[in-house]
Image (cartoon, rainbow, N blue to C red; front, top):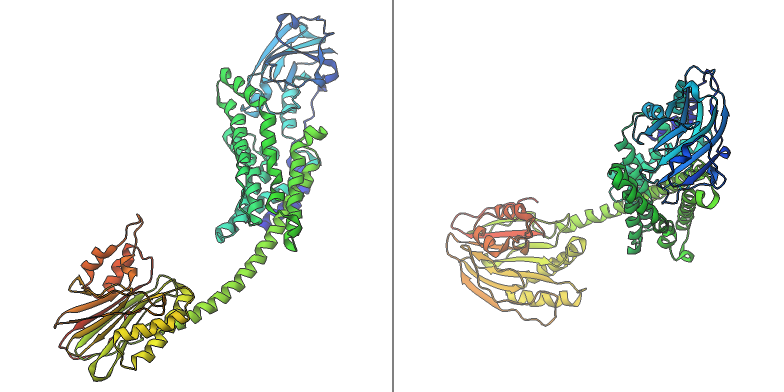
Length: 636
């Protein structure tokens, strides 16, 4: 995309002279009445249409600017032009939305057209035929009626031309669509700015973490393309008004997107005071577009009210230009690439400020060469941003590689938290399922066969998630393997394990349930803050105890009961109970109790379907007379 845009930009200086329209040569010369020959007077008096009027107290047209109160004013121009030799003489009046025209005291026509009219129709509506009686043209009187007030301070109404009617129409169309060659560098640069916006938008959708790219794209797209709309409009003069209004509105919001960009690229939170910029922009958009769709009786009062508050609105909008200073403050702490980025953003903001106020400060038109510097500053910011993005991408790639290594190490640690193969216990059937919420979890379980047909079953849950939780679980299992060989009771195992974890604890804790099962089904349990197991869909009453690692002198009591043949005991972690759906409802103890007699994998699937939030571990122990066999736990 960028290559195509760049190729077009490079070819544009060659193609532009053939693309843009130039004023067509007319059969007879077109006579433009100079503004020095015209005067203006506010108010309304039908006597001012006469051929001879004393204009000694009138104001020069070149010095006139609407004050907001001049809803009706008259313009008179002195002329001495003989049009008798022309086959179809006419007068063309520009910059008048509605009004009436007199020549030599005789009314020649009424101007009634809106700014949304088609190009040829608009030019024709401004061009009025003259009779041979109007030659020579000595005086021109124009009654100007403002149906709405524009925002431009340099509004100069009633530019008059004389000549052949068809030539005047063609000349006006060509002049309206003439591409200014002096601004070719700016148009080319802004075309590249708009194309860069497409690239940045694609970059954001590829990597959603690149938020500065989004805000800069939303600035570049309307700002870049709207500022060349006069050229695009010349190629497609039938562009709907709604499209032009949309581009104009988006371009107006570009100041707000720039503010968001500055704070985003500086990685600073935007102060709430900048919302006044957004409010001013919304107010300006309403004031610009609302009179265009209101009836005339409403349009003028609304536009007059907007015009009276224009200075305040522009002052609030100007606050956007302070964003680079605030975003990168304090400046004396800036180093390296951040200092360079600040200077580029400041240059961009200053050139935008100069562009916005060049008319007020230096009486320059919007077509002044300052656009070249504005466009160049935009491109410098884009280049700096792209460089920073690729620099960050390189850093992120290295960080992801490091995290990948850590995750792989964590997976190796994770494999030690659950047995690869469930051992065979004579007279019992084991089933297990383990599904971490993230790539690495903190749940663990182990089954340790012991002499004389006894077995120790341990299930635990480390607070937190990820690598740190897995490391804590590994530490706990390492200690458990040693303790299991000493043929200790479940309460003794938890007490010693608690002392070791409390000595090395960094503020976390571990819930744990230890159960010692005898060949005849006698079960002895000790609990350290873990969920009680379920038997026959009922919670087994177990003496409670503090989680491991909270305090080093905690004591744990034991509970003993008998399993009968055919019964199943289900151990599980709180990931089942704490599963949560989109409405924030927990899976809860009641649902857990109702499915506690199901196979381990079915219990996990039910919790996951409801909405898994934490690691889920389920271990079932069924007392049976069937021969023992080695079972493999379900893979996660």
